[in-house]
Image 1: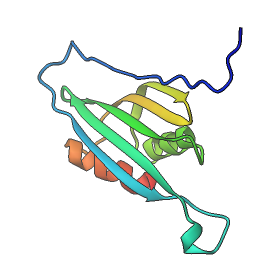
Image 2 (image 1 turned 45 degrees about the horizontal axis):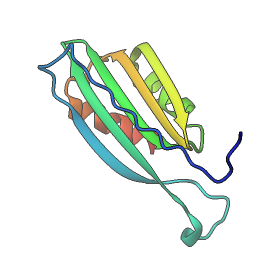
Image 3 (image 1 turned 90 degrees about the vertical axis):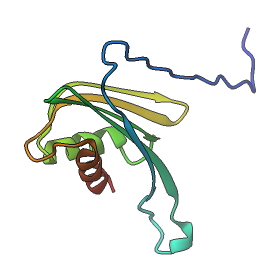
Length: 126
């Protein structure tokens, strides 16, 4: 039997039981999305949530949550390549128009803190 008009809401919870000494930073950003129209009033806003967690001395976990518009997976991978991250693991999921991306990567030379990593990624993603 098929029901029409019902919406299923999915909640995603991730628990990291292995690393209890790490810190987590999170930031939500409103980024303007390019528009086909020249009018500034028609430009749409896309919410981007970026979480960065340094694990140990060399690895970082990056979690990005955004609308599934303008190829967010390709944009994040391009930003990571430009910043010379070495990706160990990447996961991308799309749920109800929301793109969830989890990345584990080696921290590149020069980006030593969570804030520095977050700032560099935000510059590349906007």
